Image (cartoon, rainbow, N blue to C red; front, side, top):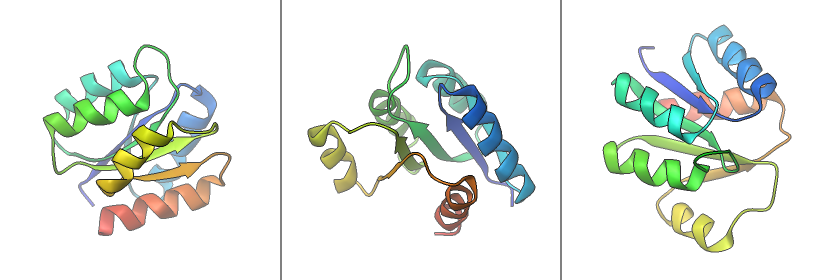
Length: 121
């Protein structure tokens, strides 16, 4: 599979473990600590086809990241994650566009399986 997945999460341990789990499944994963870094990686790597982002991050939250990422690449697939309650209005707007939000904590294997499903869709 030539697709790359971009993981944006400010929790270093989770971000690194998730990337490792994806790599074990044969998926190339790039990691970003926040939305600003994620946008830089998105601009630098044309092969990124899926963005998996936490909602609450410093410098730029996941909502703003998704809006800017989709403005750059309208066909980008997106999955959002949160360990907290989400902004109902912003979440509804993204759901209407087919963007899924999953809630942490979630087993890494389950998250990786969801990524595989999204890449195949």
